[in-house]
Image 1 (cartoon, rainbow, N blue to C red):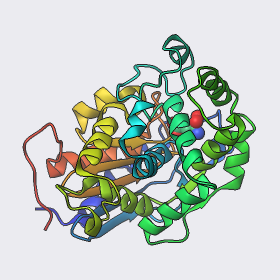
Image 2 (image 1 turned 90 degrees about the vertical axis):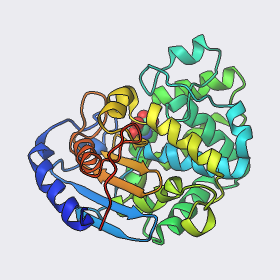
Image 3 (image 1 turned 30 degrees about the horizontal axis):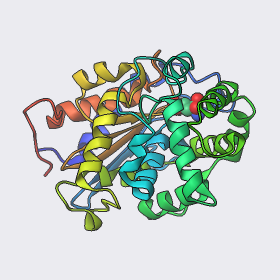
Length: 314
Ligand code: GLU
């Protein structure tokens, strides 16, 4: 049995030596200036409890974690027709790979690489007059917190330097895989990447994915069916942590989504959601301290969906 607040405090202390490790993402100038020695962690459980440690309420740039939230909103809106446009396979390539998109004639492997995420954003652009506002409202509502916002400085910084994403988007358009104006899709994509949220807000938003069975509304399961939640969780497990997904599956064994802002969110099916954040990234682009913190939590609780030693919270 583990008391969650004490467990999170213990893990925060254990990862403290790692806060100087890793690098900041230099390709987004604004993120390269963030203070590295920060760490936060938040747990939200299906039975309505929360526990936090460190900088759990400090907002940070969620970057690719937005791909998860955009996917959830697009699935709610477009339903399973979305899968006609985006695949469910790991790419085995960098998240911003261009050549594979061309080789596969505009097919996108999964919604967590940039090509797939741009198609998901395109779907949102088709369904909402102001897609970034629709996303913002959904995130605020599921956070029960109006403070979720878009950091305009991060948006400008990325929009002005998103040449590679622009190349991917134009390539997709050349294969008629994007319906809307490329500039509109890029604007929306860069805004969603510039969302700022805290660990607590992210954990609350991911909680829907932990809901079991058909329990939807009362557990914040939102408009996603049990089968859709299972699909999203499978994609997180296999594609959520860049090219380290196999290693993370072995070490942690939970659906995860990572962002270059240093956040990692974990879904614990049937239990809850956990988000950890620390800006220093490893070579694959995953936060060193946040990854280790989630690993320690999963180990202590025996949570790996691939293992068999589940513990319980008191
Ligand atoms: N905005 C970043 C990009 O598109 C997201 C990177 C990430 O967090 O994976 O390059």
